[in-house]
Image (cartoon, rainbow, N blue to C red; front, side, top):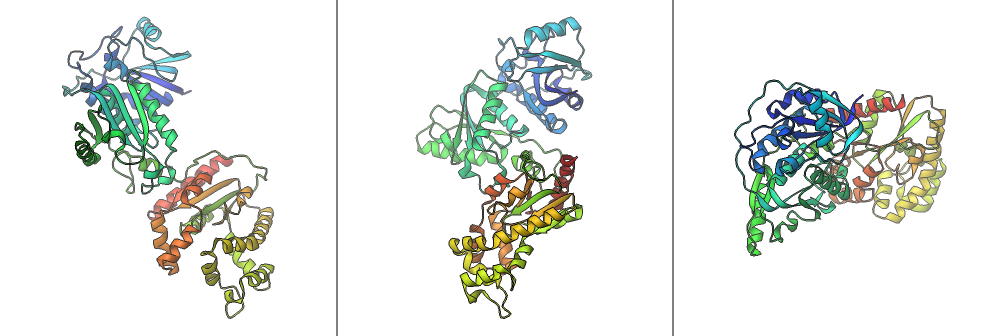
Length: 511
């Protein structure tokens, strides 16, 4: 059985790439890593004279996280820094209880028991010990020296805190003597980022950053604050001395210094941090570890639990929705190929409009003969031109059409012998038809792409395309309501991959 939380005590950091693949077989959630040099007894240490300043550990910490990104992608890996910075530290104190202690070399039982008893502050009542073999000790490369600052600042989105974030935050910790300020971008700065609708809530991101910082080095003072522009407090705080940036955002550091100089503040030393390479990326993903890649990998997965509803378990009904031109129909087609029965509410809606149906008469009575074609059928383009410019008229149309569609769909679900039904409906949420569905799946695309598609596909003017988009829910609203999200922005094969993943995970839930 896997331990929830493990502590890896490392005496041979250059060989950690041999150990981490083995650790995956023992730990499920969180892996703390403690360099043995921080706790000299009873096992000794390494390079205590060479590592005589905090920043000299930078290369070693970077190397550990690089290996963790390759071998432990599903673990929350945290390299503990308190013992490296403060030699008077006597115990490892983590926020989470340690269930498993892992050593990278053999020690006698007496020393292990003594270490666990005296050096680990929150060992679980029931814990295990595992000894792995890192091989022959390998000397570390001579460390570079580095300057220490009283107050260090950095900023970012920090969505779904990942290994590259941890490197950036750790570099700030290693160079800070008293305080670290972290600016976390708020909602106003998110639009435009890849799949920004999937970015975690601001409070969640702030909490995760604060939790990591205080977990790996509780001795510093941390100020984690929301920022609504690229600069935050870095252009106003006179006590700041250094800013940590990624290699890609060095220009932003120089811009901050320009503003500080105009405000008669000291310039900040700029420390660029090399981002980690993404070990397994596809052509659509970034080559560096990034939050956008993390969000792309969420597509087609279950983003929130499925709540039990008072509806029959069979057939299992998926409500598929999304904005106009977001690719719902193609996703529905591929789900049909997987084995689902598709109910298209749009097609049913077309049927209830037909001449001779009660809805036809009601529409003509309200909107007039102007909405009729020469054959007496409803001209949907003319009708659409009326309702999508006038919210009141759109609401009236919906009140006339939706009840008929809902009744037809309910009858089809009751009569079906399929295991899974996909109810495709653009208005699923606004019509409250999710009450008929066990899960809600949605497709999204950026607003700009939706406009392009409407102009090309429907021969709309840009004004007409914008009006159509603004008459519907925002992508954020669709995502908030969805259990599973797809994005059709990229090539067809990537969308098919999302659908395949969603279908396979659904089958696991249906077992």
